[in-house]
Image 1 (spheres, rainbow, N blue to C red):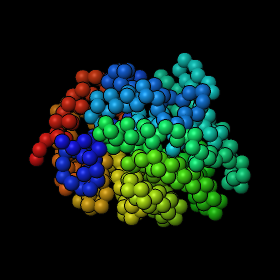
Image 2: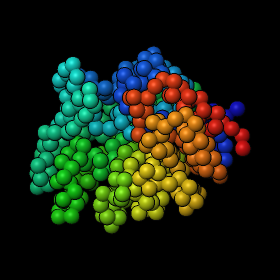
Image 3: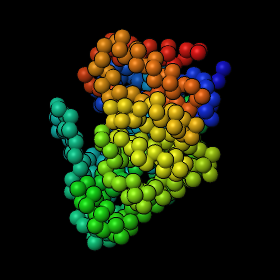
Length: 380
């Protein structure tokens, strides 16, 4: 019988088979504990007093195995907190450390100096205290050392442990566009300077891209099967900027990253919310192997994407963002449709749209796990 890792590799080779499952995230840690049991949830996802370099503890590696088994996930992320949310956590990301915590909030600081406040009840977060106020101040930015072996201590052993247990392994890195406004430069100014000051913006992009390439190579050298990154490039209607700007500013680095992964016989998995259909040809041209979440409410219809690109890229997701608000019979009917569409000729992995919501009941969540597994493993 094939392992989960072998099944994912078969799907990436577009073999029609069992459809793997890959959970993007839970909305927050308490929701995960409520739905799957606190013993199955890692203890190192939220920021600590020190930057979280190196591998997960043996206890959390075992929790990652139990987490994946409970959710029927086929892939596990390496490094502290890396398996809890797609594209977030692990030594390939710019790290944060806790500087203040209250009853309903915490404040952390990233390696670049930017701070983040997270509030609960209701949940909200924002970044502030950017060291870069304009692109003429590039000398003020802090770029971490992506080649520092301390960041990756024990990662090779962790990768090997998950592989021996039959799982596909991945390492997270920051996206280029998203990394700019998370860690260096305010979002509104970034969008303006994409038009008015591309010369200096390209210098900043180059600095972040070089960090990303360095940390990716360190992860690939330690044996990960895949590099994952988040770059939300659209909204429900269209791209956040023109395809021409994507091709000029970000495509070259996405291609470099894909080429690097392929040089290690590994894969590249991209996350981007929004209607990004206008650049889908470029995403394929870059060599990106997997892409999620493909939300139909944002115009990313799985049937169309499968027909036009199904032989060129592995499609991940296709879930409706309102899926978990539906009644069980509607959930089942929807899953049967997208899994049957995706399964044909391989190249499809099921993934939630953007995290398991905090208001879902355990009964409905258990139904989702049971029925999705039944449909995914159905022999057609």
